[in-house]
Image (cartoon, rainbow, N blue to C red; front, side, top):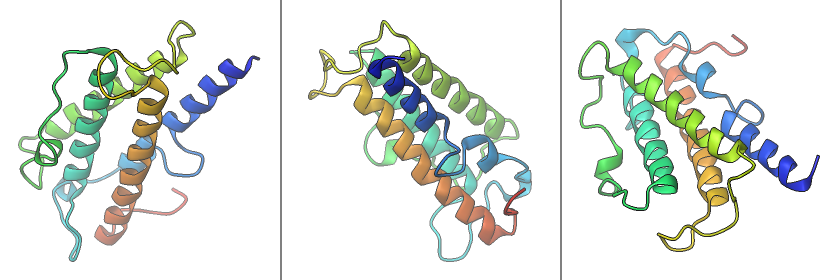
Length: 161
C-alpha cells in the first residue's frame, strides 16, 4: 500500500469515528424521542441542537469542498437550529439521514484515488480537501462527545451498551 493510500485510509477512519471517540451511530442510538429536545440544567444544548449543528456544519464543509459557488450560512447563527427540539416528528430522522449522506459523500471524495488531497481549492483561502476532511472529523468528534455528555445528564446513556 502506498503512502497516499495509507493516508486516505487514516482519513476514512477519522471520518468514520469509533477509535478514540464514539461514532455517530453509537451516539444517536436509542435516544428516546421525548428527550431529543431536552436540555440538562447548566448546559446550552439539547440532542437536537447538537445533531442539527453537526449536520449543518458538515454539509457546509462538504459543499465548500465541491462547489466553488457555495455560500456558507451566517456565522455563528446559521450553523445552529432555531429551536431546542425537532420542529416536527420527522425532523430528527431527516437530519440523521442527511448527516449520514453528507458523511458518505465526504468519505467517497477522500477514498477516490483521483481526488487530490493536497492542492488548494481554486476558491477560498488555500484550503485543501485534506484540511476539510480533517475539519469534518474533528468537529464531529467534538460534538459527538458533547452529545454523549448531554445524554448522560438526561439519563439516556449506558456505558458499554
